[in-house]
Image 1 (cartoon, one colour):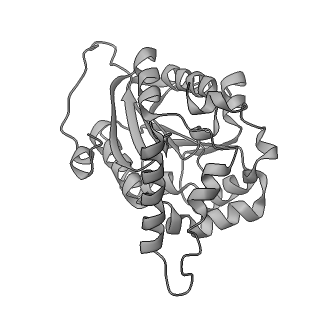
Image 2: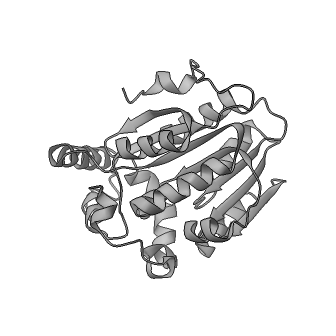
Length: 269
């Protein structure tokens, strides 16, 4: 039984910590101090976009759970002619994302939860590249499957989905080690001003009922069963993973093997 099936269904967003403006502010201010290799995960996703999508004119991008808009901001530096839609349930985060991207054109913002997206489909279009960052683990396993199906249906032929998220370790022994890796990373990145301030973050993550991660293997299986191709984990550190999948081109249903820049950085294999 997967981790999310052992718990309750995801609470409404309004009841979660993300509706708290103080929590959202603290995340924006300090996340780089306790999220291992965040910049590298984003870099690998950018390289994936560069390899698979960037040659398209005015590529359309969807960022699900966009937070402060960092990914689209970084992506737009290298690809200024993209069209992006950013979705988040937090008004606070969307306000920050709008401010960060205020000088960018062809950017749309939608306030909605993943459940609302799946139910009402306010997007009603297809995208060349869909990205999500540290958000889908808040969904139950059945909700994840539903969202992944929605993502597949909204990918253009040849489009790619990149998901950077935390996953459930397959065994208790591995989970203990993965959490210790996380603590060691935080410790090694502490400063004199804030020594070890964030060492309790992994324990808080583990005890927070809003977090209902599932194993990497189970989610990759779901993607393949839905029809995603080129499914793989391309970057991983402990519970933090970046896994991808694509929708086949209309005239090419065969899996395409490509030597990407991202695979060389840190393959999961």
